[in-house]
Image (cartoon, rainbow, N blue to C red; front, side, top):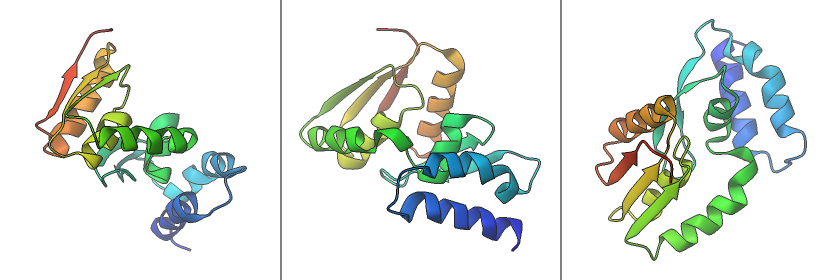
Length: 146
């Protein structure tokens, strides 16, 4: 099986297989073989809103975004977040990190204004890149702690 096909199969397994137990361990064990490329950089298509995000597969969290399309461990929390986002005009994502919650909110309510607070410069820059990549003009990234 060619590397690209194995990588796509691993993404499909991560996103569609209903069994959750051990899934993250499988992804973390096989992703290097599946990627078969020395370049760990990819573009993920996220589960919530199908937004795009640049990912470095060497980074555990970004690897989850690429293969699962979300934070693997927080799917249920994100579903709850989306329900409340439907009713909100302004949303604050405090400790935004990569911005998955900000993006999920915008996926549910395109006309909302989202303020994402992330104090780490590199992570805030990555979130700004994601906002730019997806033309999200209503996502404001604030580089300070709340």
